[in-house]
Image (cartoon, rainbow, N blue to C red; front, side, top):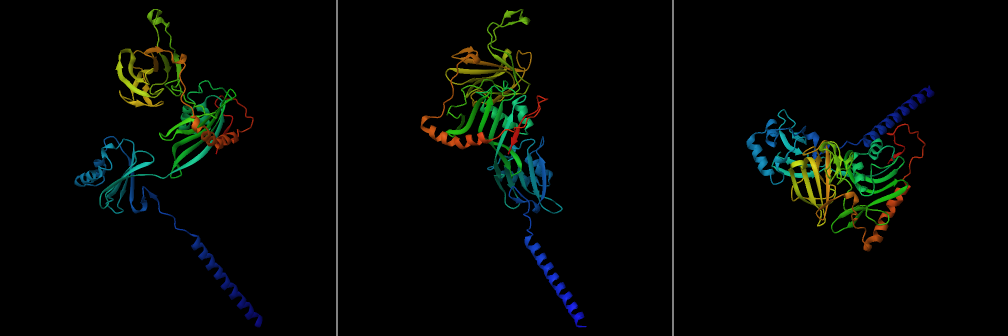
Length: 429
């Protein structure tokens, strides 16, 4: 009988301990549970509103958007008047996104209009109580990355096969525009990159922040490039090699970055069948490319002409200094006007077929001391290199970047190369 009571007591004790353990486990789970942060965007808790998103369409205006969403014109006029000092509502662009934050009731009346002119910046017009307008920027994180590759067909195809963004490809081409002909790269040439990317709210790609250091090996010759602020007072950033020499020249070799071919060169003795093989001097260099291809200024300067005339079609002429001028003919459209100051690499127009032309191209003409000459036969001056006064600072600055580049390894796996489009190596961190 006594043993029976002992057994009952033992069962009760086990049950009590089990309940205690369950309660402690439940308490721990409650303690470990953290209420998730409510979703926020543009500084607002989205759960507090009915959120309506759309893009500006043809014919849309600020007033029409609000009127469609049950806001009367007297209030719209009042909102526009009070917001005009912060944002001009007439500047809404087709295709740009906007967001309406509306009341969470059956009326769903707009309380706030948010316009995004780009992926980062936004304009808030808040009229929930008093009317206020202000601008903001989404948080941006910057991530450093590395990449390397071996050319199999072309630089752009290699970059594409590595999954690298197109703007990185163009920026690298800009760095080496004066020292490398990207149409003469050979299979087996290779490169390494150290660069930074921007991300909006840690997830949305927002472009290249900077390319800090690059290495290109062409025909076995190494070509380093390091990004450096050579003039801190003016904030001028440029690229220099490991010996402090500038990679830049005063003029680019071509007014088009990629995907062109030289269809006709400067030739004072050119004969054309159409004109009975009479001598018809060609005082320009024709760069054939698809209609709409961007045309860039080959050097800094001031636009002296942006017009249309005769066989030249639509064209732009730029005076670079007292010695040099350039001209760009047969444009589809110009992107600059007379008097504009342009920088090297700025888009000044697009390839077209205006004037006398048998196909889409830009005729690039080059003046020296008022006389048209062949730019490929000119000994053009190089840009300034690192001043002696800061050479030591520069060499100290590039040491860690050079070490980082030198330590980026190419994948040493022997891959068969059946196709010109395959990439031998890739590395992205």
